[in-house]
Image (cartoon, rainbow, N blue to C red):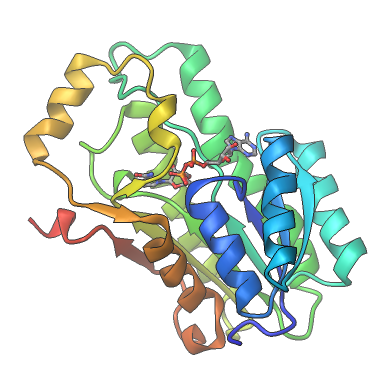
Length: 252
Ligand SMILES: NC(=O)c1ccc[n+]([C@@H]2O[C@H](COP(=O)([O-])OP(=O)(O)OC[C@H]3O[C@@H](n4cnc5c(N)ncnc54)[C@H](O)[C@@H]3O)[C@@H](O)[C@H]2O)c1
């Protein structure tokens, strides 16, 4: 039990990597707040965790909405009394639309969910964590698109670069005494449901990614294992880093 008694919020926990993290954290003894905008699937994931002997509660949240985010953090603290771990995992893609073609609507939507959302959840969580004797842990699920240009469209790549910047800033600002740690994960191509949101891939964006070469594909559980390490005390001296989990895609 590597997270025994810890209280964890996982956003985007109804599907893919968030679901895998929520289930793994619960197996490791955490009380998990399963937070997602998908009402139906939130209930299913909570049921599944409970059926396997874990503890979880569901919260329906839109991470792009500050009042919704504040209500999610308040619900976690009300239900379980504290907040030890926040995983910002909810995210959306952008059909690989490049800068010359991006609409204001797409830009604002992607930045709202992928970057402003995590900023708002971090802001609300830090208000709690900095008052706690044992601080807290923040994990931001970024992407290899947060490290390289040709892994998404302009909005996605910018949002994930920004998320890594947010992670470093929190580590640098709040990490001085090791009480609050913030790290990012940069997954490569992972088999989840996010592919279903790619409806009209932009040919120019696709060509840029194609030029990088075929990505090896990984499973959500492999990213959840990395998140578990970062969430656990085993990572007590790991702060402000970005852990790439991509099967070697970016090493080529
Ligand atoms: N799958 C990949 O190849 C890949 C690679 C790198 C990074 N990522 C990142 O990993 C994270 C998880 O993605 P996934 O692949 O597991 O996708 P997924 O589509 O399977 O799951 C994403 C979840 O986020 C939820 N969500 C979306 N917008 C939301 C909002 N505004 N508020 C609350 N919940 C919201 C969805 O309902 C969904 O349950 C994302 O941030 C994504 O950018 C994915």
